[in-house]
Length: 200
Length: 231
Image 1 (spheres, rainbow over the protein chains, first blue to last red):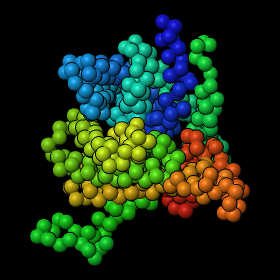
Image 2 (spheres, each protein chain N blue to C red; image 1 turned 45 degrees about the vertical axis):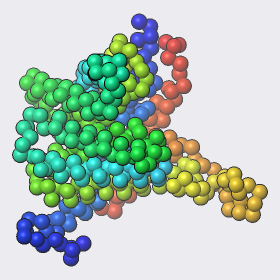
Image 3 (cartoon, helix red, strand yellow; image 1 turned 120 degrees about the vertical axis):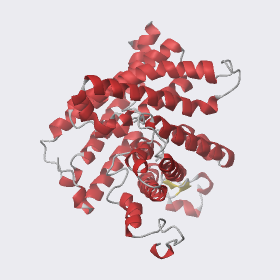
Image 4 (cartoon, helix red, strand yellow; image 1 turned 180 degrees about the vertical axis):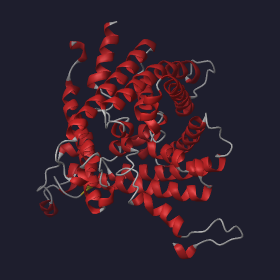
């Protein structure tokens, strides 16, 4: 159990998907104008990461591995199968959100389908493969990674809401500032990289 | 290019003003990275060196163009509910083709880029163009749109890589230009041309890509004021 908590904390803070690896930047920058929409997208990312990670683990181990059902190395199909799982999960989330929270659905707009191409989701699955996690570790990694991404997008949305009142040079307004802020937040998070997670 | 318009039996394929706009719009007014904010992740990851950025740019141009053409050709056969999965399978297939080609003919680049080649699938620019353009237009226009967006993306990628590699390591395409003298030149007359510049390690790290792109956005918007964010 302690191992799982370690992995959760490590993937949420030290190896933050958004600020240490800069994955999922497109939706991170585009949907972080207000805290409200950022909150919705962050929750959707936690949900999709938490679901797809175990499914992709099962597919990778039991279907594609040499000891799987087919007894052959099918890893060249990994990209296609992973992305198909992710795309179908996102479509599921889209349908659920549309039914139960139309206002959130409208405010997320085109960016809900774009969760599919959120590198954090596919990147998370590929990291899970390269780190050779077992099933429960993969679940912890997925939830932790999603939580870290959620925190990062809320933080930048809060900063961007405040910085609207500052006197920024016109060409730098909006997007330019968002890039600068993300760079600085990334530098701050690099400071966490040396921490030993076993200390927690 | 306008003079080389192909006039065949089908007058559909021509290269006029509208087509030229499709091709040049993504280079400036509608640039994938600085205006549409799509495809940032790989722009950050592969821009530590010009060589990787070049391979990546070519790969994205290829994937973007052909994914647009294929999706556009199939657009009437794709049901709306499963369109994302179909589009992603098309992209993933093309990316697998790129990956295997690189593995066979450019193994060095393949080893350096392998993870990021996979992440072309999740490069939002490809998917974004499929959703926004190819699902509603004919294959020929879609091909031009994909080509334009791929090139617009590649140009920014090369600019960022140029700044980061030159100031980070003092190299371009792996050749030493400024900074400490390369080993084979130490204690020769030529070594006096080197050594006055100390490589900036921050430029090699991820956050610097953010700063460089921020500055590029600033320059771009100062030069083209109609892009300024009014909100």
